[in-house]
Amino acid sequence: MTQRKRNTWQGKAVLVGLLLLGIFVFRYFDLGEYLSLEYIKSSQERFHALYQSHRLAVIGAYVGIYIAVTALSLPGAAVLTLAGGGLFGLAVGTVAVSFASTIGATLACAVSRFLLRDWVQNKFGDKLKTINAGIEKEGAFYLFSLRLVPIFPFFVINLLMGLTRMRLFTFFWVSQVGMLAGTIVYVNAGRELARIDSLSGILSPGLLMSFAILGLFPITVRKLLALYRRRFRRTAEEESATKKSDP
Image (cartoon, rainbow, N blue to C red):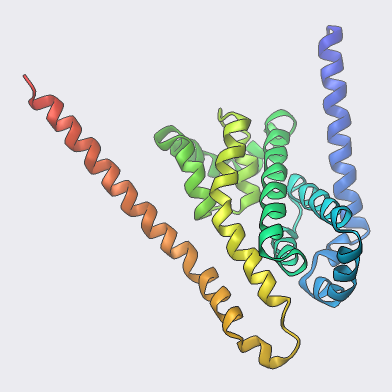
């Protein structure tokens, strides 16, 4: 084995060790407890006071935790998204969550591609056929549609995309754009949830609107995507027929 290959394997071994260590620490110390909605809501006032006095540090810590959770495919991203809305508000929360989730997803994709290819293949091989067929047919737009209407959990999409030929930069910007609308909806829901301080707050118009959007968003996007695909196929068929009829 050449020195270059030896260094590559050593680097991969170190990264795999760090990944396993991160997962072990998360499980052993039950850190998932701190990523529960109950804990976030019970600590809301303390987090808010800390944010008021150390805004940049809190945003940086939040983004770092979000990236780590997403990159390691750990549970808690949805709660962190709601917490971002409750802590930072809609504008700052959307920016923080959007970049943190995309960076974390891209890191998970890279880890799958360069370190965990065999494990991902064995674990999710049945879904990989669907992903490859979609990429072959629609290219980056297929990833875009998965981000809008996830037929697979996001962490599965991140890992499986690592086994495709899609460039990481393409994965990054398509995920950034594709997840933005859903991010805004969830951050806004978190902002409304943070305002509940009594049972009457559950029936507030803002909260009911947020939940309505959460429920209708995937259905609406699915129908719009289906309409787009039908029109795209019709246009392609018309152009093909025109070319055939030309002398």
